[in-house]
Image (cartoon, rainbow, N blue to C red; front, top):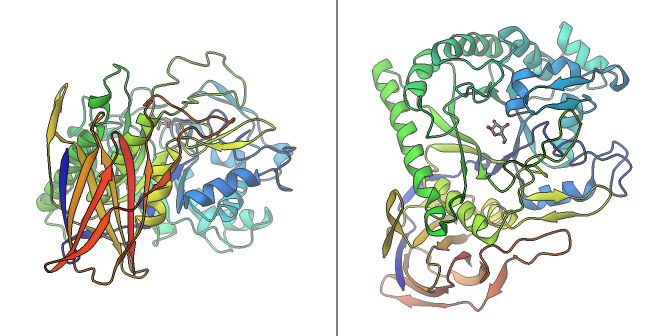
Length: 500
Ligand code: AHR
């Protein structure tokens, strides 16, 4: 099978925002306790943070981590997680039916972020709490000194403000499963008042309004429309969440998940811009896709309740899951003009690219690699690359191209990178590309990840699924530019790198 891709230096979609490669850590399962934090582990530092986990997070190059939830945040009192650890209360976490000891809170997580070279994106509780708790935490985090909450922070050994720049106004408030779920009017009202107070406390912060929990919600569309009526002037972003699954064991359909993501993104952009027109506003609202991943392997597991740090949602990811995530990352890049933030949910142990064994090793799941590759090489100007290739129909989804691809030009580093998934499960895809405006560039390498067994997984015992370097294809001068020929194996994730 053949696929053609035209790349021209001048045809750009937009610049990537580094926060496209964000992730998420919730107080849930073994994400925090026995994940990033395991005192007594041979790799733990003096604060109890696992250095091996930090190293893997750094390898993924994650610029922002959403925290502390998720569903957890809608019942969370952030004040329980500050001050002397021995005085912090043991609370019931009603979202996940576990215990929360509050040993890790805001200041400890901020310390971990510094060690992991990342920034915190903080979600405030708009379930059981409201505007007052929200403005207090902004004051505690960001106000320099001289007020009650800022001085309390200083008395807790943190003289400098954390300067958290990005804040979510609650989590999935449209979902009936959410603690103190709200309808769009109720959410819009509480969120707008919280937003006002938070920005009056620190005008430099950016805010994310809750969009729909997924594109299948019965309120999808109506929710965004009403919420933005309330919040348009007060927020910079609206959130999207979406998880993918292969529950009906139809891999060809599963690999088309990113087509649904693309249409979800386009619809939300439409609603944002319609509201902009109705309000005659000059401001553009962008998108924060702040929860996304494959999630279904763990459904129905772990019935035990009220035990802290019990394993929850520990999906073990397959080769095909990595392909889906690769397609979704390419889709985010193709929408980089409006998708500014995206958070792979989650980062450690809970539906995560990084897994840990209590007292043992930390290891990379299959989905680690497409994320790491795009985060490392997918920064710069995203190029609009028309593709011609055969398409297929899957159940409920038509016109799915076998080739999913995009190119990113990093002008500073003089690098051009093509990310590509061959969705054909049986045939190699012969990629031909005419490339214009990159004279003097050479083929650096072709990294590829594939496995004849699409259900192959990694484990603490080793990485069955990992990238290899293939023999570079042809890359020659052609009239006006260069011509590339490369072979993309059946069902594969590919990174083709060029540079001066
Ligand atoms: O990431 C797991 C859960 O998925 C989050 O807590 C919630 O926001 C979403 O439903």
